[in-house]
Length: 555
Image (cartoon, rainbow, N blue to C red; front, side):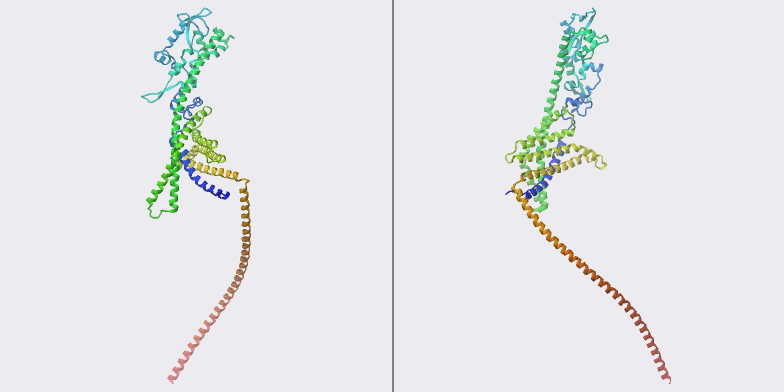
């Protein structure tokens, strides 16, 4: 039987009350409960992006190892730092192909050519310049060590960090950076004056720089533009590709590792959340029923509690298939949220609360779009849209709650007597608020779709007509009641008038009674006086009689 709009409204209200309990429990157990215990979110996410690494502070650097690399990349370039990139000893040269600086120079000399100017290099390692001077042939870093040291991307990709077994401190190992900058593709044999003048400058920029006499360095040192450009591009391509491959390899490995870990945790959290929510919700309902209906006849309190606990456990068991599905969905969402956080942090730095919001919100977005784009068979298109919008609403409200949770905790911590419990109470408070808000907005969405479905149709018109008739009947009854009320008011007025007359009569009677009382008092006083006189008279008569009797006795 099709429901009326009034019946549907009543059903929505009852559903709102049930949803408030369910959403509050779900929020407290999920984003503000299990997530807090299972995840330790960081500013910038679990993988350090180049953008976050290039920041002056290390607040958005993901790991302690990366923070050590970050600190090392900020060291001022000087002689000591340069020495870490040199391969003068066999030990230092081991990671750079096993050849020392002098061995590489010897190999270059054997080729007999200055790689910038094209001039001949003699077997003794000298070069005769066009002005007749004989100078020493030296190796030069095409991409300078100073420039390479200032490349933050190189530190992130090629830097290695080891922990000292004795002190436990993290130490940066520049072996791979040393190997890259001392690779043959980044080394060129040239004459000492040119090498000294170039120093740590960019080769092409230095060559084009104008000198005091108006000539460029390229003209001064007779550089072959073609050789120089070819060598410069080869060196840049080598350094860039080496750094890019290293960063890609490092970040890919970290994304897979952290993504797998987060996928497992998120899958478990979703599955546990479904089961725990069902358990707590079932226990609340059973306890409420027990309090409302009492203990069944013939049962003890222990038996009643045992049976109701068993019912709650049975309802949890029925949710195991849903928990298994959530395990998979949560795993996919956890991995994708980790990847999405990394992508976002490649363009902007996100705080840890935003990282949490991304992780918690992505699974909701996944469910919402799945519901809208691939609706279940038992739902129509608009019903699927309705459910999808409710899920999206929950995602938005939860995300806002997660972002504000830290502010609420900070505020509570500023209150002395709440400081101790702020970290525990704040998530619970935000869980309750977000749960209630989610339930209320879901109710509003249901009402909106109900109005949409029943707008301008015959059923609505019939109900409007019926409602108008009810309102007419109600108006007539209200008019009759008003007339009766007016009649009662008139009767009450008459009663008040009668009571006033009675009051006046009683007042007059009171005054008459007072006068009578006064007369009676006067009469009593006169009577008392008469009685006194009579008493005196009787006493006189008695005395007279006594005198007469004595007179007769004596005579």
